[in-house]
Image (cartoon, rainbow, N blue to C red; front, side, top):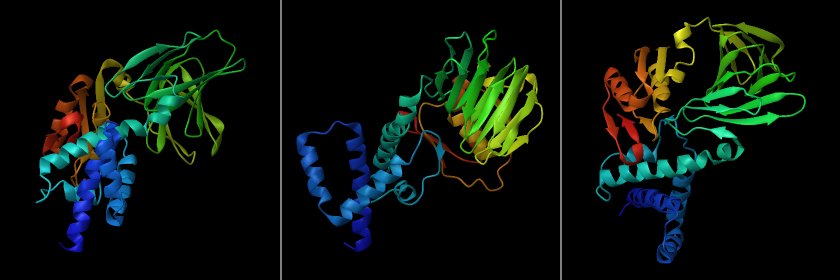
Amino acid sequence: MSATDVQDRAADEAALWVVRLASGDMSDEQIATFESWMEHGTNRLAFERERDLWQALDAGVVRPQGSVLRRLRPSPRVAAWTLLTALAATVVVLATGGSMLTRLQADYRTDPGEVRTFEMADGTSVMLDSDAAIAVHYDRDQRRIELLRGDAWFDVRHGDHRPFRVTAMGGTTQDVGTSFEVRRGAHDILVAVTQGAVQVTTGAHGEPLPVEKLGRVRYDEGGQITRIGDAAPAALAAWRRGIIAIDDMPMSDAIARVAKYRPGATFTLISMDRQPAVSAAFRIDRSDEALQTLADMAGAKLILLPGGVAILR
């Protein structure tokens, strides 16, 4: 057996060991077998690579690299369906583990595919989009909400002397008598006002920037704020009405938007070069149908795996 074959076999076995360990359901005999297997240097390196790779996954859209792409192809040692099932099981378990810190910090959160309304102690209503989380920090001087993940829409209860603020990614959105949405992306924050007005402040933009009804702004991790134009009323936080609204989005962003409403992870193994921009409206409760539509538009095949995992290839 060549050195390459040895490394490939170690990688295949490592992926399966990651699944078994993540399940938390291993007998003493299996643990002993694993420890013996790890004594070989090639196996240990392969396991550490697989473990680090999957721990880096989250429940959004990702593009696997390296060994993942290799093992999605049939192997003479391990059948393709076994590897795909291992992939599905690993993502389901470890993606959940990757959000554990958010779960511990959150006072209110939603699961993927769930949209829910909560009432704060002051009577303010907050609606959380799919896979969202907030932490509540109320004291004598202020009412502060920290957006940890996802999208949240606030209908602020007034008559309280304490200012109401939403913080996320180093910026602050302060209520000025309103209802508004704050959406946390991977690298930026979107603020959209449905009623009244807000003031947005960041470290790089010290002066509060007023945003009025139907107005939208976006600020990035560096604190730079950009006005992105008013929106149609029906398009603001459309997810509150069970609609996934996609307006002239790149295909990759559209897939990511739909994917957040699915219970399992979504992988894209297709090139995004020269893909058309997407404008569409889908139902949240039919996210797989929406994903199939996007796959058709991209000329891709949609594969659904155990655990709700989807692959576009």
